[in-house]
Amino acid sequence: MIVELINETECGFVPQESEFQQWIDAVNTEIAITETDICITIVDEAESASLNHQYRQKNYPTNVLSFHYEQIPGIPNESLGDLAICAEVVRKEMIAIVVNKLRRRVICL
Image 1 (spheres, rainbow, N blue to C red):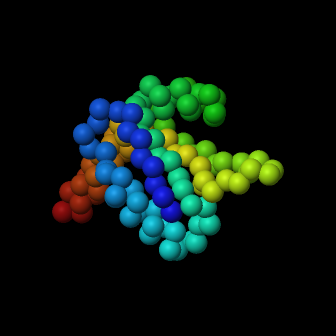
Image 2: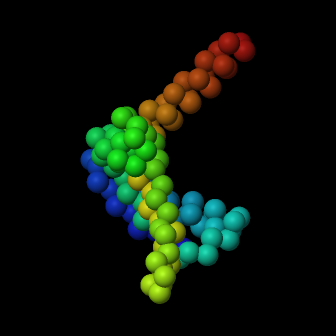
Image 3: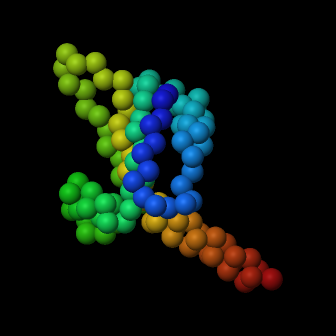
């Protein structure tokens, strides 16, 4: 599967396209995805909130939005769809997970 990565942010902590490719390849070996490409766009919180409002009627940014391509009769389509990933929301979630794990370890001591 071909991964196209579009980074629309200034974030310095976004993984490289090759890393996304490795993750998609790993998933593909497990579930045998038949489509041949996916577009991953890294967005900021404002764009994530806008997309989340437009497609889910939610007024806040979210970590990931997925958009599956619908097949149009008579037009070949090899794309799985698009992912919009909000780097800042994912970073905040990752920090919260790490902090919670550290708190649990301290409690266990």
